[in-house]
Length: 372
Length: 125
Image: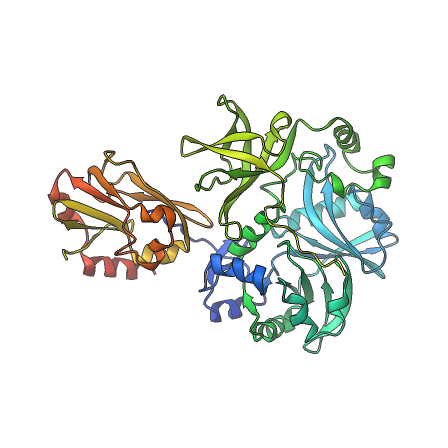
């Protein structure tokens, strides 16, 4: 049988030694050596996160600081979100758009007292830096925070665990941030994540990161989780992976992310590709991202052709695999709009054979974000 | 129990009467991770040595299982359809994939024996 080979000189996160000590299987990802799984395996790590709490090292992602005369107004010109209405320490999921209305990257933007804190995809951070510096203008400074780690603690037990170390996080609202201390070091904690579960992301100096991770892992509810389970968790949650479900050719409307376009922005425009995006908002886009559930047991992975009942290609899978919490195969992909309604029967061409499937509403697993 | 033979692609094969039983090795299942789906050929299907005979999928990826020898599929392990994790739990026993009616038993001679496969895996690291 075929086994994957590994590769070249890779960057390491501040938790690298800890991953090795925990017995992680390391793989290359976005130029970093990252843990894809620990000895318990992807299935167990995934299920544990949804039942207790999983700790993820996501330090490979880009942490950016925007400062200057009016960084919020400057960034708003590049995204469809309503950033001006963001109060201090509130955050928003938003999209950097290009002139055709395509998505350059998806990111989390947190408003701080004196600027913005952004978390961008690891594979896009260099491209985002270049893009932001080119398009934001000289009155805004964009700084890549290189000496910081990013940890994610996700799952129903996350709040109870973190509250034990950090007063007040239990009351932190969803999509809200607080500046606080962990293990004696300053950090920024946000109530957000990429699993569909309640949870937190912790931005902290690289030097203290391994100690904080070990402190959290010492709790019996917490286990280390690798990128393999991170992917299966976000797929079940219906969340996009840049470069797969969204890219510079997909508009927010096609990507079923119209909700990121603020009400005022719909009326005013003033973001890249607004003409295209707002027209699609009114008329609908010719293709749409949907959930696809194979009827059988065979997973349908990225690039699997999607065909209609007479074998005509109507789309393709952009993310697909096995959903441990659903107990079966799950997928997301783009289909031509006439075939996008939930319940539409489709077929997936897996290894040359048509396997029946249906369009389903996302997410596959209900979100359990903290609502107070 | 007759001896196991091994391929460089981490399949094993052993004779059971006039049938050859085929599976993937313990090394292969540990590299693969949790098996979530197995696709087996139809009974009566012909497989050629070195060509794809089955597919085994983990959460992350699909992998091909190649036929160590040529022959006709006489039996398939239905248990893997309902409980694919058997491949992880008992790869050399209950986790067998297919049983083949062999074209030529001498094809087994050119495969690695247990000691040879053990050395082969060590060289991988």
